[in-house]
Length: 89
Image 1: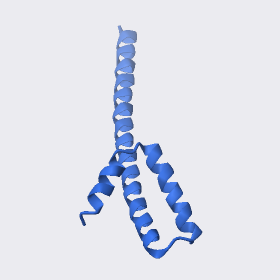
Image 2: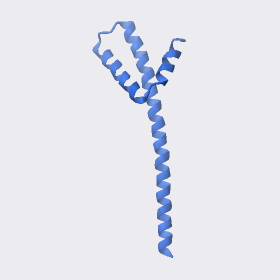
Image 3: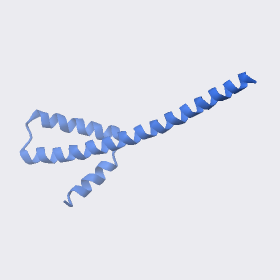
Image 4: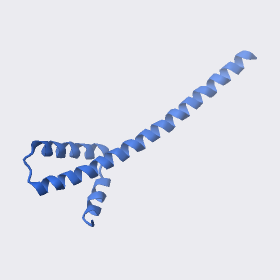
């Protein structure tokens, strides 16, 4: 179990693009089927950590975009309300 801690720490330092590129490389090697069993298991473990890291970053980006969109919609709604009020006067 201790072996996973350095693995997770290493993955956390990767950007989304770096992690995705490494994950794609691992998937390609696993699909090739030429790896020894232990190497394949180790690669799968690394790939799993990379996938989780990418998902976490995507979720964070999606949350930020949701907040930005909500703020923009609120601003647009307020502008429309102000415009409507000005027309009524």
